Each structure stands twice: as C-alpha cells, then as structure tokens.
Length: 574
Image 1 (tube, one colour):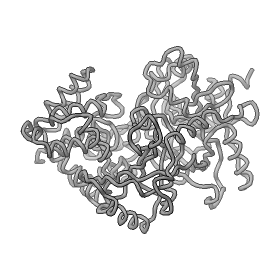
Image 2 (cartoon, rainbow, N blue to C red):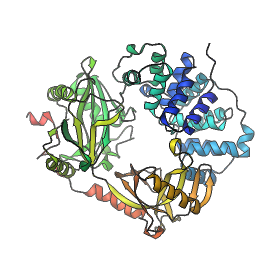
Image 3 (cartoon, one colour):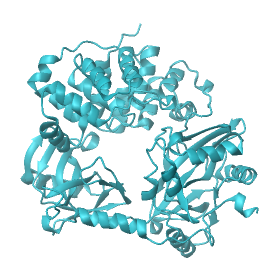
Image 4 (cartoon, rainbow, N blue to C red):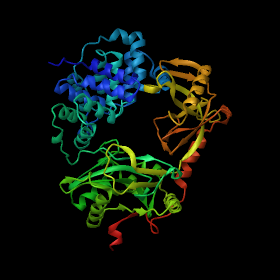
C-alpha cells in the first residue's frame, strides 16, 4: 500500500530536484517520488510539477499577478510594499523567492504561520477557489488563508504553480516525461508521444502507471507541443542536403484548431489566445474547415507588408481588442505545417507529405501558406536570407524534407538562421546563484543600462534584462572572482553589486514591457563579450534602447508583390 503524500513532500522533492546536479540525477529523484504515489496523487503531482495549478488543456488560469501576491505578502509580513518588498524582489530577481525569504525572516510572518500537512487535493481546491473569484481583494484573502498554514518552501512553489509555467528548477517537461518513464519502466519516446497527444502530464503519468499508454488519443481543441528549431549561423552549416527553405516570419507562433464554426488559437506556451484575435477567428469560421490543426504564424499584415513584431505586441494579451486596434493592427495567420487532417493526426508523416496535404487545404479553403524554396548552394542561401530580411522577416528556416513532426523537441530537423538583433553595453547589477551543474557559482545575472543623465529617473542604472549564457567556464570563474570584490549586499542567493563590470549583450529584439522600470525588455538576451576594458561610463542608455526600438518600427520593408514569402490562394486564383 502506498503511503499518502503531502504538499510539503512534493515541494521538498521539487527543492531537492532544484539543488541536484545533473539531468539524470534530477530525473531519478523525481522518478523515485512519483513511483510511490497513489493514482490521484500521481495525477496531481505530475500536473503541479509539469503544468502548474491547472492542466494546460483546461484553459483555466488563476490570474494572480506578481503585484497581487506581492501586496498580499507585504501585508502578511507587515512590511511596506514599495520600500521593502519591491527592493527585495529586485535584488532576488524573483517574487516567489522574495516571499519565501520574507516568510522565514520576518517576525510578523513567523508569528502568523502555523503550518499543517496539506494533501494535494486540498491544494487543488485552493487553486480552484482562486480561479472562481475575480477581484484582487478576494484572491488576496484566499492566498493569506492558505499561507497561514504553509511553510516558506510550500508558499514559494505554490506561487510558481499559479504562474502556469516553469518552476525554474532546471527540470522542464522533457525531464518530467523521462521521470515518468523511469518510474514505471517505459520507453521515454512512448511516454513522450502519449504526453504530446493527450496534452496532460497527469493523464500521461496515470496511463504509464497502468500500462495503458497505447490508449492515449488526441482530442481536437487541445494544444499539441510545438516542434522547435535549433538556432544556427549559416557559416556553421555542414550540409544543405535534404533541407528545404522558408522565411522565418517576424510574428507569433500559433497553433490553429478548427472544425466548422469552432476555431481555437493556441500560443507556443499552449495558452488559449482565441479572444485576442477575433479577426482570425471570424475568417476561419467562414471557411468551415473539416477537423484540422495548423501550425503557423500570426503577423501584423498591412499594405501588403509584414509589419514589425513590435506592432504585433499591441495585439498580444489584449483579450477583447476594440475596433480601433483591429483596424490599426490587422493580422493574418500564415500556415506552414499541418498536424491533423480530417479525422487523424499526421505528425508521423514526413514534412513533404504534410506539406502536400496542407497545399490542398490551402487551395480549397483559401488559407495563406508559406512558400518553400530549394537551396542550391551557400550563395543561393545568402540570397534567400537577404530577401527575407528585406521583407522585414527574421531570417530563414531550414527544414528536413523527410522529418516527422518532432513535437516538443529541439533537434536538427528544423534550423533557424537569424541575424542578431543588436547589442548593448550593459552593467552587471545583480548576480544570482546557479543551480544544477552550476551550483556553487553565480551564473545568472541582472544587467542594467544607464539613466544617470535621464531626468525621468533618480537612479544611475536600471535593469534591462537577465542573462545566463554565452560565456566560457574560464570566463565564469573570472567573473565570480570579480563579483566577490564588487559585492555590497546579499539577499539570500542574490548579490547586489557595485556597477563596474560591463557586459556586451546580444539580443534578438527589443520589446515593450510596461511592468519593468525601463519599460522595455530584451528578447533572448545572451552574453556576447565581457568588456574588461570598459567601465560604467561606457554603458548604453535607456534612450539608446528607445532609439533602437523606434528604428525597428520605422525600417523600410519590401512588400509581398514580388518574390513573396507566402501565398494567398484567394488572391492568386482571381
């Protein structure tokens, strides 16, 4: 008979996974825990680790933002939100970690908390209660009632589960699938396939435990894990044999499910974004498609031109855009793959086979579809790359013609060839302790830009992004030595630094983010160089960031009338 588990047991296991070095060791720790659970506990534990408070396919969200939980925590800990909580959060780089530390350290919080053993179903009910209420005050009251009976580590992971994303423990979905396979003695690929078509880690774990993985079935309107591309520079390509080429659009990845009047759109993180794009919804409802799943891209398309991603941001996250936004930022869905056709999934068929079926659907139902081009040689590849950039697109996608749809994987079947968006010289403001194989070192860094001559700010530097890659082991050792000399404050695993170490950072793009002090964040930032030769006076400014952002919007883009990157059958057939 299995021993009942508690939420504290689960959170302790999650914390152990975070502190464990090496993927195999992390998988073994998780597998050992999962193998001892009852059916109901297994389903909930797998969901909480892999998906969060709710199944991705449920469409539910607790809608508890960092400000809501932060204000509740400040009240609970009897501290000032603006003067104490926010600086602590800036220092740690994590709202949930800040709350964990405050719950442990503040006398007010210690006095109020009387932890008790929570069962997983009880925690699930708290998540449901948060989903059922809409007001901030009501949500905060539910949080406070739960936190009174939880330990700090439970509170931290409770908050992270509400975020419906990564628990940030160096253990993503792929590792969880491997842990489920190990726990119940199955092949990882078989478990991964079941997870892909069910869209649920909880259901997958139960099927694995009961040796019923072959019963996993795909349901329309439940998102599938996306196939991912590996970044590569054109000069690093060993061969072009077997690859076909298409342009990489400056848009938002989207999976479209349709059957007749019913249409749903899902983002790459498997969130339902249907209400944000009523124009696409209306267009596809009129098409009256048979059961279909398309993989593609949403782009702002105006005057026969794909517009900058920055303009698409005006639509993203807007649940019910008004007429003015719809007219100013019209969007289009461009398909480049077909995953479900008629009554059966086709992701096990080759790309060429899937594209042939997509072409038939595109012509029959007037669906925009990417054009693909054979690549003769590297000179031809460069010509295609330059054409993509002139269209305002990010670069190229190279896809193996005989590849199946490798859902949730990042291998070499799809390659993205992109031009770096740009670089800024930034200053290191905070260093965060690493986990896993980087445990014992500071390997995650908050980087800032200068605002000392900016009348809008009183500080000298403000954060612009976090980066944790792009340096060698030797460079990391040298940085850690320098960090010890620059440390002026310590907040648990985070160090506050004198702003002296300059990092040249490379990024894909600049995005508006009103939740940050700068008002912007960098898309996919990574180290380009550690500028030992520069000092804080050489750091780029917020005005440089704003200038770069505006230049991207103002850049000229060639329209799609000549050498188009996609086809629209409704126009070509006229």
